[in-house]
Length: 238
Image 1 (cartoon, rainbow, N blue to C red):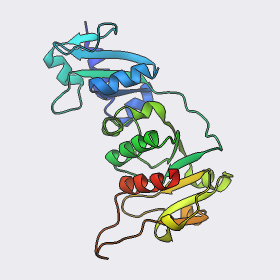
Image 2 (image 1 turned 90 degrees about the vertical axis):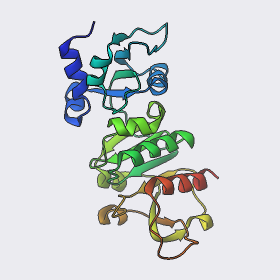
Image 3 (image 1 turned 135 degrees about the vertical axis):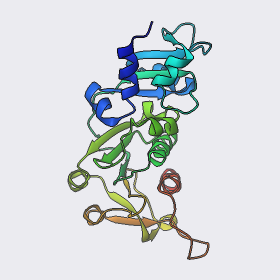
Image 4 (image 1 turned 30 degrees about the vertical axis):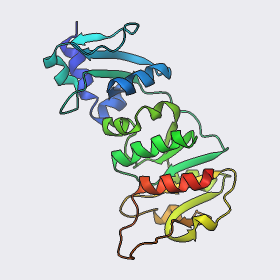
């Protein structure tokens, strides 16, 4: 039986300030919920709308259609929703490849980049403090469960880039063509804001400026940051 206070709590987690306050986040959709459960993330509570079965071996609270709509953040609820504890922050290891994001604001872009990190075996993602919250429901929806396998840290990015021992590779429109670069076995790939690219302070710390060459008309817009991430990570792994 669900209480009014539970409904109020879960509904509030659509907002960052309440996620931070309660150290909880919410995800929707059977596939993503089960992936996070199987990955070992600590469950606070699981909910399923009447008629939507989460799994016989998993405990969950069954809700009426009316109650489920109150806790869901989707216009057309999937019928499955999980509330999880936000993991304790982990340190950033100075090894392998790391992706660093400088003020990426779009939830879909961040979610896709997390998914790309998972695909290419990048286990560490570092975000500037003004990058969108990785526990934003729209980000989580775009990750398709990959957030369970990527460690994410929010830091003062300038301080991190200044103190790291790993080489810094930044994505710029006027950088060296990435296909002609000999990439190191470990490093940090810095990706910038959707509208403004990498900030001036971070750009000053980047030792290797790389670019994806343009083959079409010069009037074409710059690449979406998530698309650029996919191409650059593919080249790094190649």
